Length: 613
Image (tube, rainbow, N blue to C red):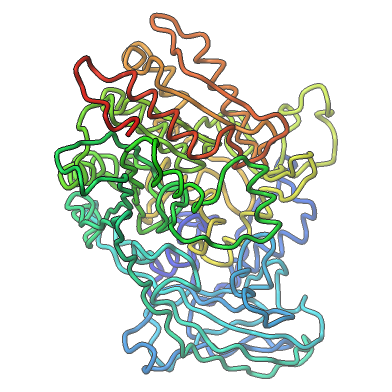
């Protein structure tokens, strides 16, 4: 077996704990990683998590057919009728007490059903990978911890694509443009659900065959209102050694076809995760809501996509074009629209390929005053980055509850000063904890809006060690940022900010992250970019954001309020006791506010007939 590729497969994306040159993950290794669990990085149960480390190293990547005795052995394969080519990827076993729809969707994340996973390298049809009591699991560490009982089981395989990159590294990752939905990703293989009686003291061989192939996602259909764009990026394709695509969902204004002479302002909306849904959830279908969904939406302050459509298509509403920018990478379903050594030149591709294509095919006013940005969550971080990196191209940015962009407040810790991502150091709570205390405190990642703890960062990241890093948002919490901000490790994959097993922060990597720290960028370059940003930055956050995003926003405001020559002259709005997703206006009101801003900034003599038609 190719040891280097084995190591890469085991460590894909963020799940590369103790990898690279630090150790060799051979197929049948039974050697511990020698992890020093110091006091600053002590787990809640050191012995338990040391066992987890040992299991991680022991997790098999081979096609072995022998296994440790004392527990059931699962043999997972696929027939040639499902796939004739060899498979390189990650094979996941899901164990559940129920076969209700959606169980598989809970394979990963803190609410996960028990999952166990191994990697496959050029696995041929009919050959099996083995899941046994040495295979790493979550939330239980081993099959031995599952109680005797009746369970439903299902397996799936994430199929990776080979990318021979221009930098000389050969990368295995999910196919770009599939949404990275794990078992729902097009091309993934799945077994049928089986009911079994499980007894950890017995060791029968249970065979699962991955006979189902997830079909391609149906392409969205253009309508009178919405047009869908997908174009090949020559810059990114050259970097990845494989076709790479960018895209957009374009919402047209009322009267677009009947006024062929008219041009319109544009709202650019960087996509918040990979969703083929137009901006503002725009839809001409009146989709029913459950009471709980309606209550949550109303609490956050926005209307349904259908209600927005009614306003957009009605009379006396601003006529603008909205463009959702879609920029998935082979690693993740969004790139942050910035250049990086791991993702490639996404900023260059967006600015020199995608946006010129869009503005060449739709009647957009191609002037800075008429180009504005609206972004939410990860899209908020991306909108801020685009505005600051291209201050003379875009005319303003409205940024809502942004993904961490200020790395002094990244996932509830300061990456430059903290020692451990998972454990709160005593200096971080100075005056409240004794430095000689023998107790440790796991770092909280998610809270409720009334302050109750939900998940720790460790609980959120550990499933990634099992699933392999490409199934849903949980990998994106740290993995997408490693790909964006970090250097390339020796094996060609993103070098992580912190060890995903112990939480120990690599401060050389943290310093490397500064180049994408937008708060640091603003401070370091204000004399150059400040004159071009006056009045353009508008940020919104709930002051009880479940993900603690408000703290980085507050800190950024503190800097901007000190700016002189020029003063930033933007705005910050906070929602008292409001959480992630809150906004102080409906989406229709937001568009109307943006339209007033654009019209006010229009040069003398420019037509603003689009504003009040």
